[in-house]
Every structure is written in structure tokens, then in C-alpha cells.
Image 1 (cartoon, rainbow, N blue to C red):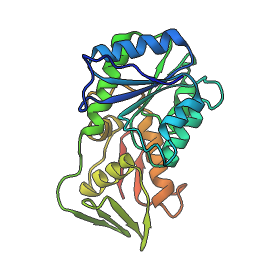
Image 2 (image 1 turned 30 degrees about the vertical axis):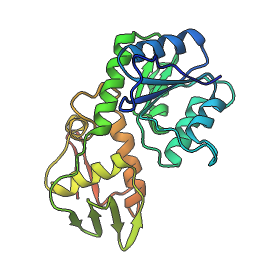
Image 3 (image 1 turned 135 degrees about the vertical axis):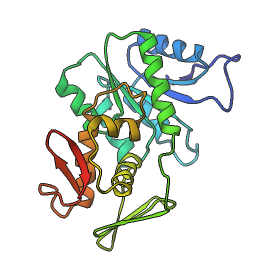
Image 4 (image 1 turned 180 degrees about the vertical axis):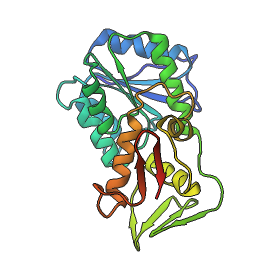
Length: 246
């Protein structure tokens, strides 16, 4: 069953809408209640198949506006990692917060690899979950594109107003965060950016997730713009310091 968990007093067309996907009834209902009390609209799904039906509805029903997805990894049918992969494959760039009882570093890295923005291990406190959701939503609304509308460097041309990147005459498709990273590098070609600096500029100084997400996004960016990602010539690593545009 998928249902809207918004109370009449909280319902507002301007309120951000959060999809909560978890097969544990108590967790799903408790998270929905906490978010609803904060004024968010909440839609719930108890399985991966139900979630996919909401995220990718048939044309006859039309898309459901979503501003953030909270995804449990261990779901029946379609698991949480598959949901993240499908969302990013279809360039759906809403923030994703993963919930999981598996909180090892490897599990967090895997979650970030498939496109999640944050990872919260179970058990968790509702105050922390609400704070992380609030931070993710703020960052998704923040525009970091400033300055000249066209940036050039080596064989790369970046059109800020059009959100387009051309590398050696070929247009490449970047995710919004990849685009913001590249734009930041190209605006400051001589500056070395530490992981912490990049988090602040691209993700926001209220970021509460795993810092390794920077390394993951840098690798994705290199795979799309570098002739040989193993030997990057555009986004250069300075070991012990950070990254710069080469």
C-alpha cells in the first residue's frame, strides 16, 4: 500500500514532498509522522516495486513531484540500491538519503557510489533524520552557478546558463553536482580545493553526510570528461592537499 501521510493541517501545495520507502511499518510510520510534524508532505511506500511505481509512473497518471527520497536498502522486490541506480540513470536529481542497518564504511561507500547523497545507519534518532533531510533540501535549492555564463579551459567549454558541457567538440551529460564541481574548478583554475572546501562550496556548509561523496563524484566526473580517467589531465589530484583544474 502506498499512501499520502499528510495531515489536513499540514497539507500545503508549497510544502516539500518527501518519499519514505521502508518495509518496516513502525519505522515508516514514525519517520512519516516526524516529517509531517515539521510541515513536510510525506508519501510512503512499503516495497521497492511500490516506490518505483511512484517515482516512474505510467504516462496516463503523470509524474509525482518529489523533493527528497528516504530509501531503506533492504527492501523486498527491488532493493534500495537498485532504486538509487534507476533514479540516477534517469537523471532524477532529487536528494537521496539511505537508511540501513548495515553501517560499515564499505556499505556507506557503496551507497554513495550508486548516487545517494547521505547515509544514515539504523538505529537513528528522529531529530538527526529531520536535520539531515532539512540540510539536503536546502542544498538542493541552492544555486552555485555564478559569474560569466561561458567558461573555457583546455578542450572544455562549460555553458553555465544552459547547463551544458562540451569536451573536445563533444557534448557530455553531467549530473548537477558534477556540473557544479567542474564549474567551480574552471572558475578557479589555479586554486587547490580540499575535500572540505568542496563540500562547503558544492554540498553546503551544513552537510552532515559522508565526506567520501566528494571522491565518488570526482571519479564520476573524470570518467565523463577525461580521455583516460586513470591519468587525468583536467581534474588533477594533489595528494595531501586536494584537487585543482589542470
